[in-house]
Length: 197
Image (cartoon, rainbow, N blue to C red; front, top):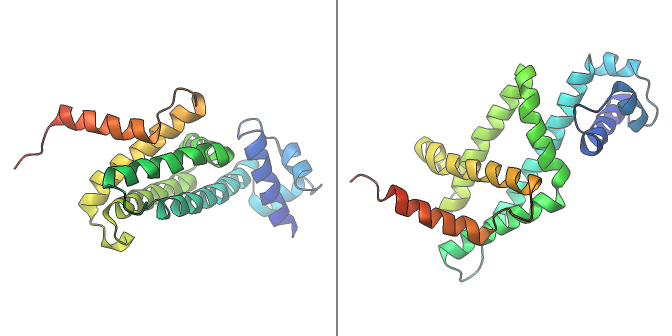
């Protein structure tokens, strides 16, 4: 690898081990195998730009892994509710197995306040996520999902995903299971009632 790639890999390790706020230029240089601190400015312009690039890399990997998880959630012979519960159980399991990636996604949201480039990237990722989640639930390809379905069904699934992730990362013992999600949605359906004719 060249210095640029070494710096990205080092920054990624630092994000996973220390987080954004506690990562220094010196930390990145050390984690990059001794690449000089000046190389950060040369290749990326600033510590923040390098960390943004590393976060985007981490989130791309996270999105790929979540996509694989969702694509494999079908359970032969199960009811739609059982398949939905199984999907959430797999996602919840990934909070443990890929904790650093989930934490990086939360950190990216707070850093986007200071980076228009990162904010645009995350907004595009959310749009893809809404459409992708709706596609999984509808059993169709992403491009077959209409805008209204992405904005409603997809957005609600994204909200559930973000909320479950936050609950699990702060208190895994009390966080909901897939069965709890299904039970909660059934209770919520009773509160909001049927839609207008």
